[in-house]
Image (cartoon, rainbow over all chains, first blue to last red; front, side):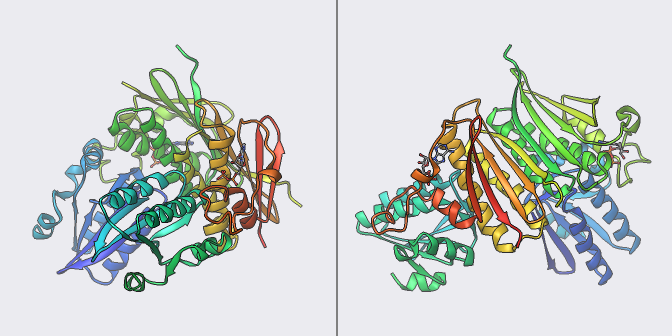
Length: 110
Length: 110
Length: 140
Length: 140
Ligand SMILES: Nc1ncnc2c1ncn2[C@@H]1O[C@H](COP(=O)(O)OP(=O)(O)O)[C@@H](O)[C@H]1O
Ligand SMILES: Nc1ncnc2c1ncn2[C@@H]1O[C@H](COP(=O)(O)OP(=O)(O)O)[C@@H](O)[C@H]1O
């Protein structure tokens, strides 16, 4: 369970490895907010290595998308597997986020 | 918790990721025996990504070293962290195995 | 029908960092009983995480010394998880909101009970010494 | 001195694949009580894995329906783990061999009780309805 951050061009890419849940969501939030504070504007969260997400993990994604937008930035998501896609559909969060099938497509979309 | 096998020159390298314990040791044993059956002779088990090993994991290493030697092959170990080094010393298995500090040194030693 | 048997019984401190391992034990139980893969990889882990985090954060209010218990009961047709806390009563119907309305979809909280209901075949609240949330997953 | 309190209480089926998650819960408990890092990363995980696998494979002989229970007790000076099985009595002194002698070092089995004793501050066998192996780790 860890978050790794890398930079692809001008996009900050965050890989979520393992679960995004109540026990670790603050860590993701802080990492992204630190980058935002440094002036970064474009963010991609890649879920290809993610297991499941709980409601507090979803809450952090909503919170981050608001904060990034307030700074004139953008948050995109990529690589939701079927389980995660279902979660986003159940909660209608698929209407709130721009979600791409692959990392490449997400990077191009900025 | 998984085992990945790769080939470096004529050496079969096994990376033990996570724990080597009663719940998964059979998987390691089978993977190595399969390679031995295919005619491989040189084996290196790399523990750089290993957490802990229990007595049944140590037992599998002893068993493999015997079986490999019976076929005229060799088993070497590399990258024991302090915890694992302690385990091998407590059980005197450090006298039974050839153990290298790094993967490179282990590969050169064959 | 055979008497339901306890398959797993775990008591942990009121600390959310224990949740993931407990859920992994439950998911393993789910897989070994051959329930549909999706139920074991998504429905159970998410719903149980919600019930556990509510028990720890809402029920026990992270109090030192209070515990949360999870008990799995296996019967012929279902796998049932009871999540027990030591907190005060609450009204599970009244607390549940619809987080998918245009007003609510931007909220950061309030999706827990909703997800439990969507992902489980049955969700019950039983008032005992504390709260018991009973999550039922049919084998089907 | 305060009364020892139960910090963790886990009951699992007799299946070795549950061991790793239970040990991870115990190791987390160890870290949160600020015991020395080495005790939480090596001594406890290995010794508890040994006690659990003996309880499952030897005590309960992998019987369907039999359970293994682990209970952690925290006191001012120690963290104590009780591992309970439902098996017949055995003689922990007589069963323990020295696996480091030239004859024994090539053996594939028999290192479990030895490692428990080397890695724990105290190991006790208590005969109750089944066996209780009590592993004590001093906080020091
Ligand atoms: N075990 C519980 N004990 C007390 N109150 C609870 C419990 N579970 C849920 N609640 C109440 O129900 C509310 C809604 O829960 P939920 O839908 O999970 O959303 P959230 O926890 O994000 O607020 C909580 O805010 C809390 O007031
Ligand atoms: N919980 C238990 N119930 C019954 N017998 C046990 C138990 N734990 C250990 N034993 C006995 O002690 C012996 C030695 O145990 P151990 O040192 O762990 O080595 P191993 O399990 O590899 O044989 C076991 O083979 C078994 O006969």
